[in-house]
Image 1 (cartoon, rainbow, N blue to C red):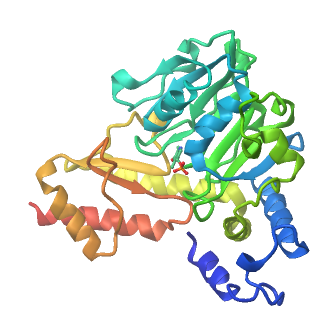
Image 2 (cartoon, rainbow, N blue to C red):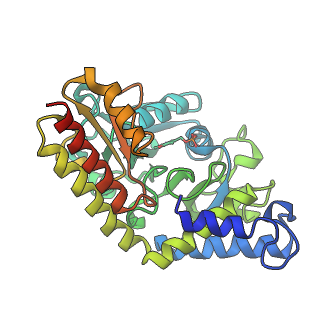
Length: 350
Ligand SMILES: *Cc1c(COP(=O)(O)O)cnc(C)c1O
């Protein structure tokens, strides 16, 4: 979270804009909260350049719930294609299996999730109602730097992108997207809010068992107010959108994220002590998994990092090693501090 956003939320905690209420105390249908919601959507649309023919939905349940909600809304109980590139897309495919036939169109499993399968070789099914990809594999550190153009691959199916962990870190080419979803907690705000951006023509095809509160058409018709939305999380995400605009928008975020990633990967690649195993053309700008070549030093590395205020560097248990998550709110100085520590630690071990 950007510190500025946390400070703003703190200063308005007890009394939002002279309303005499905390945002947490407002009716979600009152004019105060409606203005917060409307402003958040307008700012997000501007930031991500979301075209008119897409609906923005503020939902709940996180990315994991969307793994079920997407097939309930789009699969018609028929079939869907999945491109498995790491832990998250694998999870998405496993969950969708409850609602439709899942076809693995491509996978990087034999490469230990360290590369991206070439779209030219994807086995797309003609009966697939959609094609799912994970834009950024948070755990494995693999990112699509260009969204696949399904039309040019001979498929009319809409592309579904899980953009939980890189939303707002770079522009989105909406001409290639049918639906994008993401939990807010990685790059946008507090946990509890799930963002869905869906092309209008994909609404209204949900399976009859789809819960009403998770039916995109119902949610869209009610401007995300069919049930009580996560109001405080929407408000804080809205503050983040305004912060992003003050920084220069998503193009500026991308420029900074490219520079931050270049610094960290450049240091790792220039070292014999650390290693990143992901192919260079698909390395994540948000999540950088790396290993100490001598893994017996892992605990000492983490202890020393903590002493310098460098936290949450332990890699996911399924991958091991270390992982630096350098989301939008992480400044260049934070990445520089990590690189300085990594260099000092290496020298201390000589
Ligand atoms: C974190 C994450 C999720 C899961 O989000 P929840 O909000 O915990 O359900 C899904 N997909 C990706 C890519 C993630 O990084």
